Length: 95
Image 1 (cartoon, helix red, strand yellow):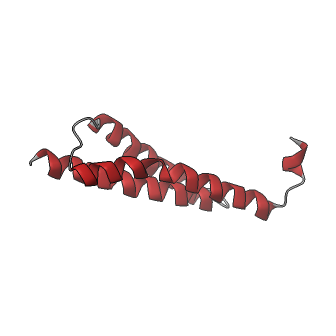
Image 2 (spheres, rainbow, N blue to C red):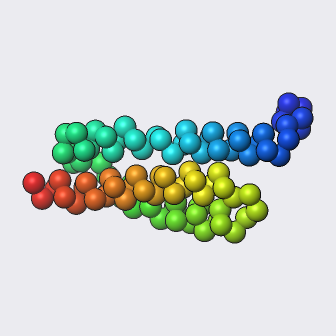
Image 3 (cartoon, rainbow, N blue to C red):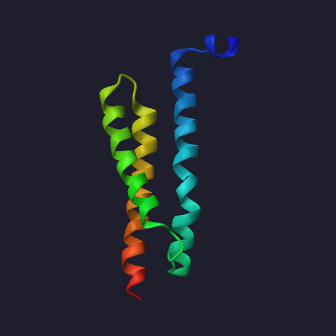
């Protein structure tokens, strides 16, 4: 823990952005697979709905705290990918 106390606020913010980026890209493989195969049958609509609701709540929180940049960035990306996955779920189901 001592290591963390020796970091500047900018360094800690950078760590936050790196963590946010890595968290954000967790949906990329699923979105890519859905786009490539045009199949989302195994993707739960409930999971997508919960992720969308939770990321909206996280975005509200991120805008309400000082230095909420990492929270905002991560959740904006996850929200965008989740909405894209929802879109795929709707359009590919009709095919």
